Image (cartoon, rainbow, N blue to C red; front, side, top):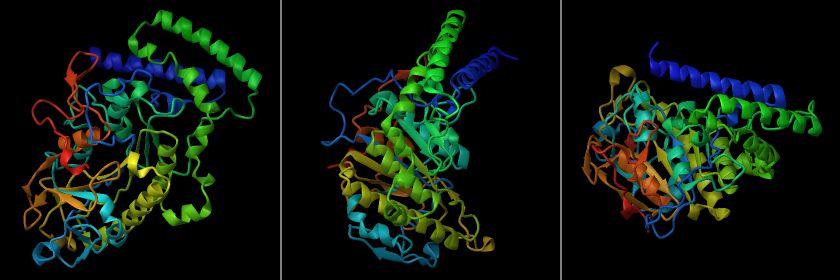
Length: 441
């Protein structure tokens, strides 16, 4: 076993000791908070002026994992039936058309900008999702921070008692803080209706017993830290204080969507994605910086048109309801809502796969809305087959730099890993992304 593997094993052992201590002495499982974005070492606001005239405070990232077909959603080619197939384009209240599968989006297109010239260097799902979230290719020697971790690292938490970064219904890896460490990790929730598990004092433990156990845990922690002086261990020093603050926070109820009026829940819809969008609104309302909500099922190698129609219906209702709800509550101006995916689908229709479409990283679409985005517009253009960007290409690194720009973050600012290697939110020197500033007012 090499030294790197030994270090990883040591770290896992230390984390497990902390988890077990919390279980034994406090009577609760604080696993969601081990690495749960309890960030106290954020950089704060960028010193020089960066960002649009109205800087966003929050991001809701709608992750269409599986590779969303751009032709059948946000970049239809109605005059090229060979690639478009049976899907028609419909007008919107903005200056562009979308697929017939997005009738509700068409009604609020004046609030959104569609980027039609996205491209990625990664054509496999896992690698594409990694790039989408981190602006770097995966490496065996390091785990790069997810974009939510970058944002919390730069901006800090807005609500001092809640996590700054939450993912809902998506791969837990998307919540990884990588080399930033535990305090900038996202909290992954499998289902939007589960709430934040293990965040309440159990009825079997009285307040007095809880306080007594907490004091014992403090003593054990002090001895442990004196023995193990590693920075990794020290990063857990405030674990118990943070966990207790969370447990006592009035804002913790934001995780419970059952508190939302039934009429509002029905308006969003009963599927997990829609309820995840509702949870995202509740979380940004109480100051959570970054919320990702996942919608899978876009891997349409087979039966593309029926599959995309079904997925698009879910996206259409969830996104349109979320946008209207944020606007009604006065949150849309400070919340950037993003629709992203790891790649698009081929213009070529695979007839032998019941009219499927294969992976296509060379060109696809994304959406940004709210937070000063120029609504009713498009940025970039694909060629007549939607095969390649025809103008103003946008890389995944550019896309993430643009998210950073919306929040007033200098995405070119270098931060160092524990080993001293330089990294940026917008990627490496080769392929370093630049924000698309012109889509903002």
